[in-house]
Length: 66
Image (cartoon, rainbow, N blue to C red):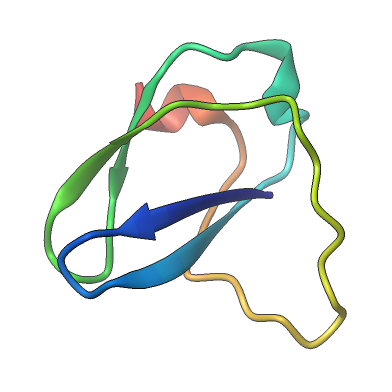
């Protein structure tokens, strides 16, 4: 999972990635639900997610966003 801040709405968004996102830390372009595309830097830091915490977006691999 990758978390990123949406400056347009002032909220935290969550991107679910099926593959390990920490293997490639180059920036990605994320199409946000607000309508903007955000440039996000991928970090190997992992945060625990609660089971009921929803995802805003979901991709199989970060290559879909590069």
